[in-house]
Length: 426
Image (cartoon, rainbow, N blue to C red; front, top):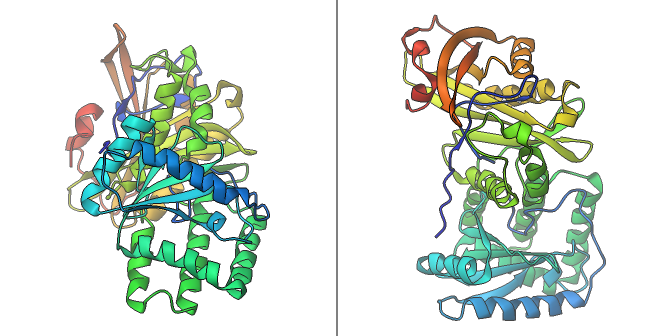
């Protein structure tokens, strides 16, 4: 099965003067989240349409296509699930399909879809036993899952479909709940929890979800590591979604942005893989890398991230190395400062047990990143000459640090260790 791990998006420390991009030597690609009923890449508010009889035929056509990719591997069935599978029920026009397999056959089915169908494997994205596959053909829109047979998540998905098909009164209640969600314009990640509560409550009320399944359903469905949307005065920070590929490519494909990185300007394929790596990263538990998309007026304008190194001192210390990258046209407006401040707040809210130190490393010529660190109250901690060789030249390193939470005087022995080595400490 394709790896769900996070690869290293290593960064050199230099940027053109004033370029607002900074990051540690070993930052990451990074970071976001789907639900039982589909959704990896739609943009809220949800577009709900009246029931369309063509949806059933779309499923049949897609089933034939999937069967052609899976003819040499074992699977149990291919099921039309989600709201488009329920006659008469208004829905977002996306066909949701579960490929039901024995647990031992998950890898074979995933590999067949990747190799024969050109699918991307996006991982379970916080929902155990449901492996999301992204079909390169999205006309009509569809979400394809490889699902383990017999587990609560798969069983309840099918049960909800069958219950709604057989109960017109319940369909009306369920339709109202989903419509209310759509008109509120809730973002994708937060919508997952609301929708799934509707699913659980529907099944519970009508006796279709065993009491002993309730905890299993809730625990399996959501990763504790997934972040909901963070809103600031002008921006929103969120987990990455498949729809972000073009914006990520725009952000990281220009020469100025890559000049002092150890990579050339990103290709579209590289941008695509980095976005999907961010999405898979939600499955890593415990999570040590976070990268969030930054939106302004519905458009992704940048990204911010952090990598955690836990240091076993007395008391323990969590060190977060921060990075950020913004479109040149969006620099000089305070967006990066606003976004990084929100990221720091989110990290501190989620890591309450230990003392926390934050660091930002950049090339001294990177005046934009230096000024941002200083605006956020970071202190210049270390200047290292010829710290890093990048594309045939040696660059210096400027380290900024801030103790965000400090219950004791910290020992200083580890602070003089180069960051590239400190990042390997556990």
